[in-house]
Length: 449
Image 1 (cartoon, rainbow, N blue to C red):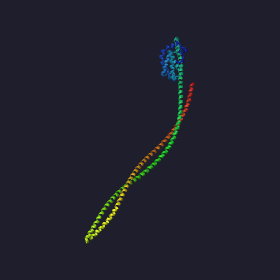
Image 2 (cartoon, rainbow, N blue to C red):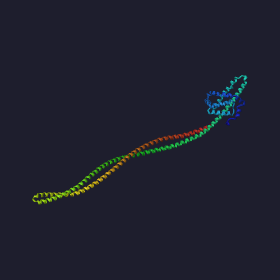
Image 3 (cartoon, rainbow, N blue to C red):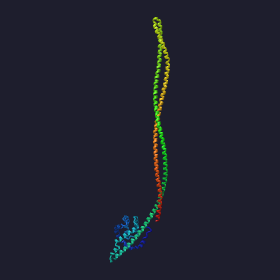
């Protein structure tokens, strides 16, 4: 027990409780053990005017402690165990919210009820006759002993209750002190966090503004790039159209070259045929020359024979002379033709060579036009691919511009949100300061109390 509780023997002397009193009480052990359990249950109705006391009395823990303590008191067991019982009961009263005056109320109700049960009240004593004085004296002595024990118990419970209350207050103060430290730390942390949030919010605000500016600049650059890409796309489409026209012209030229090549080959065949005809003519001329020579020889022989025949061969001589003249003219014509045949053959060979050269040139030009047409077709296909790529790029730049616009809008929204966060952080910092001031004031008042 605490040093605040007076030593046991001194307490008994203070309340003038003697061995005789304790002996009288010990004789009530059977009564206490048999009647008090039911009596305390019955007395619950007496506490209806004090709901907080009634709730505590009905608690199993409190009821068990009260019953054990009252049995000790009525049985005169006022010893160290009684002191421990009083401390346990006072602690239970305090823990279950029974006010200090509730202890006195409880003792008054239970003490009077026990006195009535034992016939110790004035009404009970008045019913005794004169010849029952011995019983009267015993009851008066028992009443005095019970009253002194109840007074001692009330003082002990109040003192113990006060001690428990003091200990509870000290624990509360220790907890409050620890809580104060914790709250100060929390307030300081909240204040620091609020300042950090405020700093971060300002930084975020600056960053959002810079992001918005950069987004605007990027949007402007993207618009310019998109315009340039559109211009390139238009130029590429025009180039593709021009290449298509050129490809068509080359195709036409290729067709004409094919036709020229075919005509040159046909001409070459004809000229070669003419050359062969010239060769044939030369052979025919040689044959005619031979025939003319033989005819002239026959005409000479015929003239000689006609001269031998005399008058009879005169007509034949005339014919022979005409044949000779015809043969001479044929020979001259043949010579003239023969003179022209080598020239015609030479010119035919030259024409063949020229036509072969033309045919080779036309064939080379045909292949060149085919190569040019293939190259232009490749360029046209590449140009179309470039045009498609440029169109995709234009769409991409438009999408980028739209995205940048969305980023700018999001940055503006974020800027507004950051502004709200900054306001909340400033408000939080302000209220953290107010909380710290209010808590310091509360702590000061609590310590003063």
